[in-house]
Length: 154
Image (cartoon, rainbow, N blue to C red; front, side):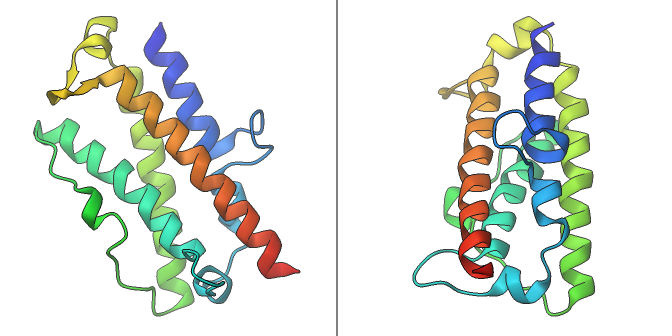
């Protein structure tokens, strides 16, 4: 079933895959402490900001599936308060993982017809196209985080 294949790709980038990037969000961020996550390099986003950004869409899409209304906005996708403690940063990473697991499970439930249907509005394209865009978007930012980590650690 196509929904299982899409869910598997989402799981790979967010939780446990190594096939495309030899890592995933969960693994890459496990050892990242708050100081490294918030360290600014030039005019680039911080690791914390990129983590929030990807998590914002995961959480927002999950909420839209549950409520039947898409309320997230690109303009808010980098609007967040920095974590104040290591514990808070750890809770945010854990919430990201929990939401990622939920996202994978929800995607598995979609029928072929639902995947072909509009993603809330016809102008947004199909559900399948948006789920695939979420995968591509996640890999894009996973790459950014990986590069930032390498630069910050050197």
